[in-house]
Length: 292
Figure 1 (cartoon, rainbow, N blue to C red):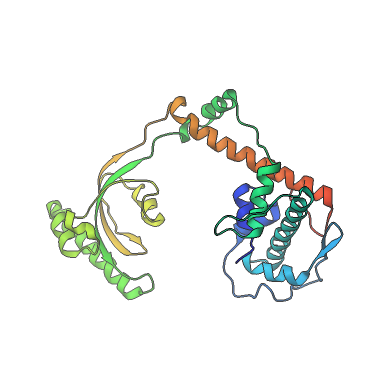
Figure 2: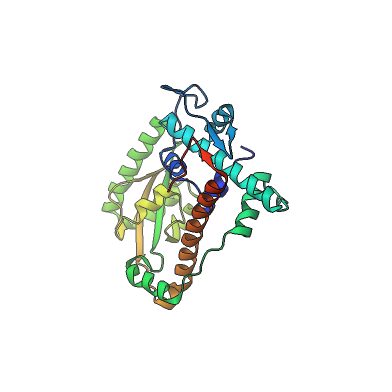
């Protein structure tokens, strides 16, 4: 994947709408993305009158897999157009390109050019307060739960093992409903998690602390023993929520830095997007339209 520019541009918010759409729809599929596309032959893409080779676009498509091969081609062509625009502008400005450790030359060009040419305005106090007033419900300390569990391990691909783990978990749940005080005993006897030494205690967990599927289900539970096992990539879990604390709302002073960082990122993304359009107009792009 050496030489890909898309991750750098995505981080800077500079992907065109076509590339963003392809990334949103991207998933593995059996078709060879470099095979000929159905329907009419695609138009040639040019930057400053120079063609972007269709064979190069086909090679780049492997990094933009999508259900629709035309969307994959459009995302690949957009990437190559951006790469060419950046290279030409760096050359015109005479910018010295010195890649950092682990950075490709194409990635270095993007970093150096954006640092040289793009300046995003900082949000003023009024904008920060306006955002705070409109988004207070989303601005709070992380929710937390204190949890203990029994992990009944089963490999993701072993269907029979996962069925056995689920059945065993349901049996433990039934026993615990009758005798709640046996949770520590069951954890120490049956759990495949190192937390069994602490009776299954995982301590306090905030959103994002665990694998997504466990995290998502944990924060849907009310305090007490879960009625069903919680399934994750590791197997089935018998879970008890010991305590739950919903995050307190943040004051403006507490949220200010977080809001400023978010608005700065948004402003920079918009500035980079606009700058790419300026470059496209400056050099001329044919055969593909960068998103408006």
